[in-house]
Amino acid sequence: MVYTYPLRMSTPHELPEAALEFFRKQGRIGGRRRAANLTAEERSEQARKAVQARWAKQAAKTSKKKGTK
Image (cartoon, rainbow, N blue to C red):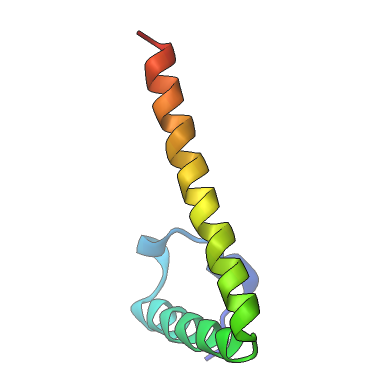
């Protein structure tokens, strides 16, 4: 079965269950393959950037709450 780009843009409840399962499976495989091709240093750097982005997002939420009082 081949799914086209516009079908991927549909909301999840509009997609056939077979399509959802296919995308879930491929996404897991893709992440593992990508990680397997990275060096330990590259993985560490990406993890560090992800943590910094999460903390920055949390800090932005907190500062917005403080500013509204």
